[in-house]
Length: 109
Image 1 (cartoon, one colour):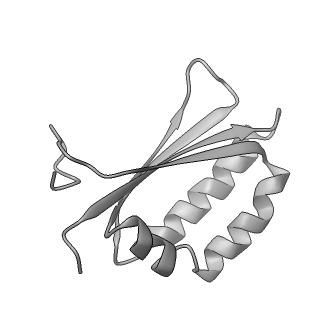
Image 2 (spheres, rainbow, N blue to C red):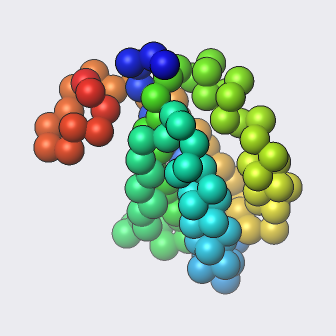
């Protein structure tokens, strides 16, 4: 397995009144994906200035291409993707490659 790391920073704009229900769905997804071999960590945050937004910051071993080829195709992700329309208005994804780190030593950067 590669020593490379890839990070996903995903912002969800949640439908009014659906945040806690969506959070439960998201946590369920994280429980499933956390057992994957390439999984390193995930952090879910609330945006203090945008109360209907949830942000997840995931770190994976590998590259964007390996994540798309190996992780995105998992059956539990397909189920999750089908339910997103019930909970969110929009989602934006940023793909990141760590280059430096202080404190946690999660990324090996």
